[in-house]
Every structure is written in structure tokens, then in C-alpha cells.
Image (cartoon, rainbow, N blue to C red; front, side, top):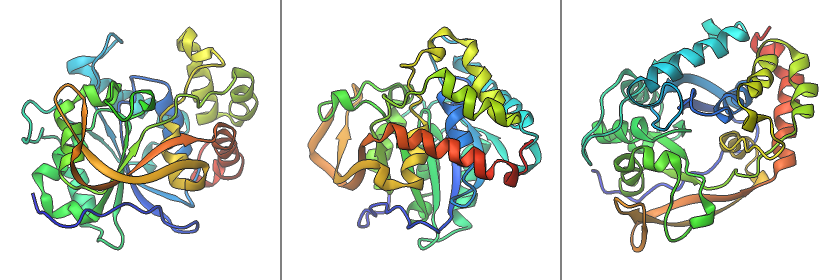
Length: 304
């Protein structure tokens, strides 16, 4: 890889639009639906250039080899619910990396590279990874020339185990990929919070279901799992976009980027430049931003 000073991502000031690709294991958890909706209802901030379906592996239906298709198909249903199919480009991502240092090929990886090259160091592509970081890491390995043209935000919520290790689902979904993000000096935000992003059903019914279309779809999606209906259910992934919209809603710091071994233990002695770690988020403000977005902007993006 090219060894240059590692760029530390800086969230642009309010009023500046971010070029954005969202890489998501959409069919794995309900929080991905709320995260994507959040980005969509804030078009003044996010110019969504693509949505990539990522892999996931657990006991859920469709996990494993079929997980990318499961995520892709649910993204299509989600967009159809708001009659938004024609407004967003969707791609399929990669299966987990088989070997460390070797990319996993897919149209999603190539699309990250394409859109990164369409920008510049002064107008970078922000890529938010809400699942395993396979596609993010593979793009960097495959084309190191995009290094200064991207800013990665990786959802690695596992603050309880910091700074010793991580046990986070997205990390263990592709350990080779997560290790790559830390080591390759890609400009990186390690999003390490969001567990307490919770909202009662009564509020999503009041502020989302009443909007119809997409809002109704994501509210009613909570009924698919009893755990998703609880007041204590965390909507983790939404936090990444809250941070990019209003960074002062979160607590963050610039730290030395550690290395990580194959057992997900961090080494803070052998470091790789600096990165941003987000460690806390204001729950009430986060949900208010979602509800405000639906109230003000849903019809403006063409939502029905």
C-alpha cells in the first residue's frame, strides 16, 4: 500500500453535501432500515450515490451464502414502499474475504472504486459500512489510488470492550476486512457507540407510520420480531448518519489507530497513523433528527 500521512476524516460543516455510498447488511437487522431512511430524508446533507448489499452470517433466515441476495431484495422492497426505486442505484457486494490482503470481488467493490475516482481529495466519497467491511476493505486493496479520495465510517459498536478488544458482529463477520481498515491507512471513523439508540413503538407510530409509504413500512417492520418492539431495542446503525449530519451530537476523539489480530484483540503499541473514534451519542437528538427529516423532507425526495 502507498505509505503517506494518514488523513484524519473531518466532518464537513453544515451546509455542505456529502457524496455517499451506504454498504449495508440490510436483511440482518431492523436498524439498517432506519439508518438508510435517515440518510434519505436529509438530502440537504447526503447525496446518496449508491447502496450496496453486504454479507452477514448468523442464525437469521437467509444468512450465509444467500445473505447478499437477501439484503439486496429487501433494499428493493424498502425502496418500493416509498416509490423510490428509480432514484437510487443498488449493487451487490462481496462474500467475506478468504485470505488477508486479497480482495473479494463484486460489482459493489468496483462501484466504490468508480465513485471514489469520480471525486477528489477535496471532494471525497464517504462510504458508510453498516455490516461486515468486506466491500470497503476490498476496494482499498484492489485500487490503492483511491486512498485519499474516500472517507470510511465503519460501524463497529462495541464500546464496552474498548480498548482491549472488540466482539462486534460486523468485525467478526469479516475479520480480514476489519484488520485491513485499521492497517491500510484509509481515512477512518471507527463508530463505537449506538447501543442505547432506542425509541418506543408509540413514537415511531406517531411520527413515522402517519407519513405513509416508507415511514409506515419501517414502523410496521418492527412487528416482524418481538425484540424489535421493545422500548430497549437499539437502532445502532442510525447513529453513523446522525454523526455525519450533526457531529456535535456525538462524542468523538482523534486517536492512534491500533492494529488488530485475528482474535479481535487491539494492539495500541503498533499503530497505524490516526483515526476518529466515536464513543457516545445523544439518543433524543438522534431520533428528533429522524422525525424532523420525515416531516420536512420526505415529500421533497419523491416519497409517497
